[in-house]
Length: 192
Image (cartoon, rainbow, N blue to C red; front, side):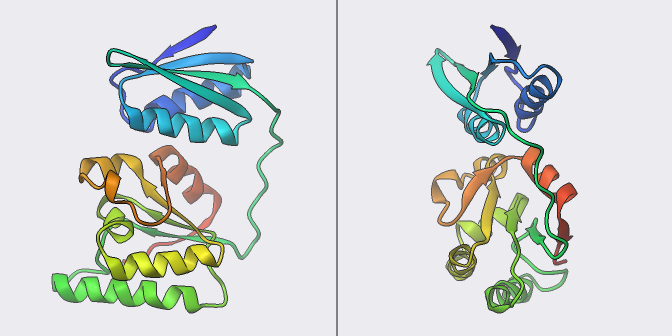
C-alpha cells in the first residue's frame, strides 16, 4: 500500500498531497500519516467527495489515515450561472470603528437570509470563524441560511488557532484547500 508521510505538515498540505495521488494514480488504497486530528478530519471529508472511505488509527503521536476506494466519481458538476458564495475573513465589515464595523457585518448577515438569491456556501476563515462561534447574532443568521439550503463552512485550522474548535455552533469544519476550490469554482461575494 502506498504511504504519504505528511507528518509536521499543516492544513491544507496533507489534503493536497492525497488529492494529487488520487488524481495521478487513482489508487485502490493508500494511507496518509499525519500528526494532528484536524488533518485526519480534513482528509476524511476530502475522501468522501472523491469516492473513498477512510479509517483512522493512532499510535503515539502518529495518525494513520487509510483510504479505500469505494466508487468512481464523475467529473464535478459546474455551478449554475447564478450560484455564488459569500466569504468572510473577518468579524467586521470594512475599516473604521471596531464596534460599528461589527454592527455593519451583523446587518449584512441579518439581511442575507431574506434575499431571493441565496449563497450556495458561506465560507469563514481567519477572524471570520468568530461568526460561527462567538457572536450569537451572526450564529442565528447563519442558521437561517442553513435552513434555506446554504452550506456554512469554517476553516478548521483557524478555529484551532483561535481556540474555537469546540465552540462551533453552526455549519461544518473545512480546510483551506476546499476554500480555494470553492473560490475558483464559484462567483465570490466578499464583503469588505
